[in-house]
Each structure stands twice: as C-alpha cells, then as structure tokens.
Length: 317
Image (cartoon, rainbow, N blue to C red; front, side, top):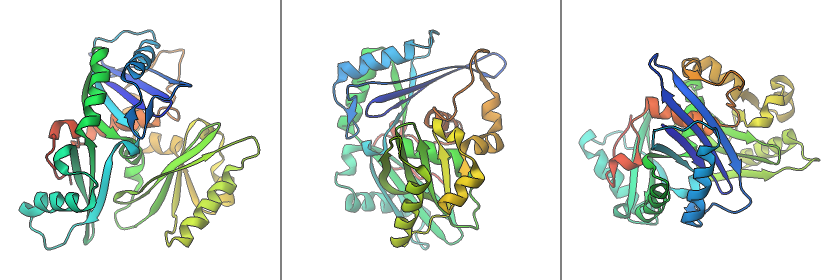
C-alpha cells in the first residue's frame, strides 16, 4: 500500500509492502515544491500534480508493484459536520437522521458527495462526525492517479490520521480538549480535538521566523481558547522540530500539559513500529511522516472509507 499525503506545496510518501514474515518492507520520501499543487483542497493542475507524485514515489529507489494508494488530503478538501445524536433515537433511524442533518448542515447536497460517518459514544452522549468529498473533486484526483497507473483505494482527511495517533491516550471518563500541533522549521500548525474527534475544522497555522518563540505562541493560543470558553487540557506536539522539545520545561512555559508524539507512539503503537522494516542505514522519520503513519494505523484498525461507501452514509461505532 502507498500512503500518500498531499498538501498545498508538499507531498509525503510512505510505501509498505508485506513480507513473508508478516513485516512491512518500508520506503519513504517527502518533497516540498515551489509551485502550488492543490488549492482549497483541489488539484491546481492535474498534469503537474501527477508529475510531482510520480517523482516522489520514484525517489526512494525501490520500485513497487503495488499500485494501490491510500490518499490523505487536507481537511479543507472535505465537507464536514458533527452533531449530537438524540439518546432516544432507534438504531434503524440513524442513517436517516444523518442524511437529514447533512442536508441541513452542509453547503452541498449529500447526493453530490462521496462520504462516510462514524459515531463516538461516551457515557450518555453520542456524537456523529461526517466527512464528504465532492464527486467532482474525487474525479479530479482519480484522473491524477490514472495518469501514472495508480488506483485510489481509500481517502482519508488528515485530521482523522492525526486523531488516530493519540486516540488510545484518551480516557473515556475524562473529557478533554486537545490541540495537536506540528512543529516545523518555518511553521507551526495543528487542529483542535476533543474525545469525540475533530472539534474545529479551522486549521491553526502560524509562520515562524528566527525570533519566534513557540511556547509564547501556544500560550497565547491557550488564552484565546479560554476566552472562547474552551479550556485546553493537553497539547500533542509532533513535527521534525518537536524532537528538540523538553517536555517538562515546555509544559511549564505554555501552562498546559504537553505530550510529545515521539513518546506516545512507542507506548501505544509499538506493535506497528516493530513491523516496519527500514533500510539499515536509515531511521523511520516518524515526526516527519506522522500523517502517513497515522493513516497506516487507521487503515489497519478502522472501516471508515469514503471510496467504498459511495454516497451512502455508514455508521462507525
């Protein structure tokens, strides 16, 4: 399987090929382009994007006969809503409830989308989350991959890939508001979650320079959320620059408990790390490819899939 994440200027690639011993032969690569690849979640130019993808998947130097792509796209590519499910609603009425909500809450008709939904339940509350991609946009991406003889087998929002990376740290009895941030050399970005999944569709993104202090930026973000009646309980920090962060001093400076992803994954997802067979001269760059690794875990554990369900709305508990 080829796990491929496409952002505005960047492509991240993780290839996993199962061996006879049940392990995964692993190759990976990422590249940032000056030209804009996608805008508002849509390909800017189909031929340009196809060429960029072909360059990236060829770069590791290992040809793979696998032409199946697990595509991960930015949240802005998708139509999204989440809503509480009435406690007295019958299981047979759930699909109808979600369809009705999609007509009310989305800016496009559900018939024009390929989509899927899932339900998270905690104590006496049920929350349904829906993601949908327009058929037109799906066809654009399908054309991109057809040009280079690849086939999309599943599509996932990046926000679900990130959520999967820390979902097992959540305790059912404790409701939390969590900021997942990716710390790069020039940019700090992330999304806001709670125990039920994505809480805010808007991406938190700040450009960094040599004078930027990440702790100060996140402390200000914490105060901003507090003023918006959202108390932040935890920050999950990932990205290549997060490897330099000291958890104790960082937590003290920001004023919110900090969990580095580099400690979460070995604790909760060690079995997935162990199956990766990486060239002896390389180390798997988890903090660079967190979104692809999260997609891998999601694919192994969940049945959510936009492409398999067509326009039908399925319930995932």
